[in-house]
Image (cartoon, rainbow, N blue to C red; front, side, top):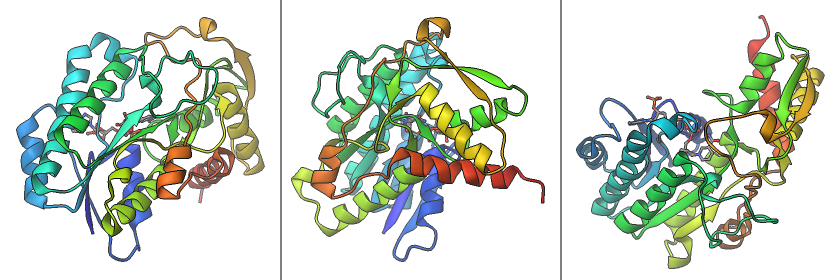
Length: 298
Ligand SMILES: NC(=O)c1ccc[n+]([C@@H]2O[C@H](COP(=O)([O-])OP(=O)(O)OC[C@H]3O[C@@H](n4cnc5c(N)ncnc54)[C@H](OP(=O)(O)O)[C@@H]3O)[C@@H](O)[C@H]2O)c1
């Protein structure tokens, strides 16, 4: 099976490449700028058409959450127009598209974990453009699997785990928000989930396998809880650590408003696909250990 991923250097694209390595019958190919530029739908269509994949993973996106507040047109062009083009190209080839979306489509007002069909209510420009992307993808390709994920981290690119470890190199105490709750999710687990979905679709592309699904780490915490866990694991692996000072959202102003609770229920994915991500603490421990080892002098 040939899987084509949009974006080369993104956390999820790189995780897909790593997790597919050595797996028989999977060819994982990535394509990014300049050949595939989400701002230019014709480049997206051409890049996908030429490569004739069996499945498209639409992972590239405008992901700068705060910057999007001042750059709405560009974020919308990329996250809705670009996503639509990728889904449409897949539809023309008659193949499914797996499109990555976000917990930030929700308002954060719900007390429990969000279900796929709960009302959306994005609080930020990024969330609104990603929601427009979901609508565009569903409209362009009936064979769509929209995966809402959250709080992604990995050994690659920029993410919360790497930021915490870097800050702990120079600071003994770090203020981290303790009143926003979500599911930390390893991009390597997201990649495993996507590979599972790809195999299931190839085996039996039944109607129930298409639609919106939540794919996130099992268990939830606050950003402060996440940071504390990172430092426990890093310390035990001989890496940097710091004390976490629990602060409120009000004490950490940011341009884009984040949902206070964006915990995602992953029961639908487990029910339909028989797959659930590991407990977030296990995956967090693996990645922190790996980052500490990679940073150690040889
Ligand atoms: N990270 C999270 O916490 C999180 C949470 C929920 C959902 N998601 C979603 O998951 C997906 C992947 O996230 P990620 O963490 O892997 O993102 P990422 O690391 O920020 O990577 C984004 C990728 O998109 C590419 N890109 C941006 N603009 C482009 C354009 N105009 N044309 C082509 N490529 C473009 C970037 O290319 P360059 O390398 O060239 O810049 C990069 O490869 C996104 O859809 C995101 O919305 C992420």
